[in-house]
Image 1 (tube, rainbow, N blue to C red):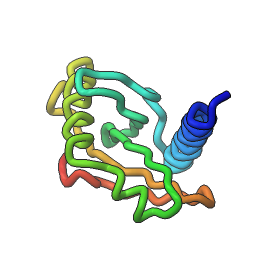
Image 2: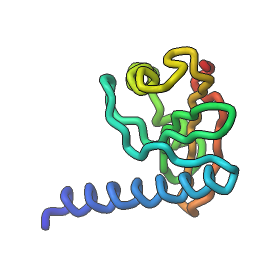
Image 3: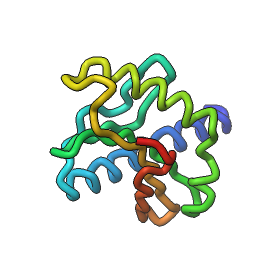
Image 4: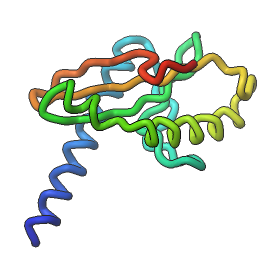
Amino acid sequence: MAQRSVQGSVSYHAGQSAELCVASEYERRGYSIARRRWRGAGGEVDLIARNADGLVFVEVKKSSSFAQAAARISRRQMDRICISAAAFLEQEPDGQLTNMRFDAALVDRAGSIEIVENAFGLG
């Protein structure tokens, strides 16, 4: 297997592991996971969590530090996630009026998780 392919595979599995850990953290906080890796018009949303207050669209980023993980979330990516979230809300009873927010779940090299609620400044 080529070096690039091995690195891609390791990154993919590390990302999946980070998403599972983040999903468990949201469940520990009283949320249910409505969808994992939901694909909408703008692209993929890593996690969609739900509780009595509404929905949380979660972007999971893993890097060597929380700061480096946060820096990997671009404005373009936030815009794409918002487009996908709007498509997801079409199937909700309250549609676009559904209470929701966008979180960034940052995972460092040690596997520690930092959740930044309302990270996009929307919702």
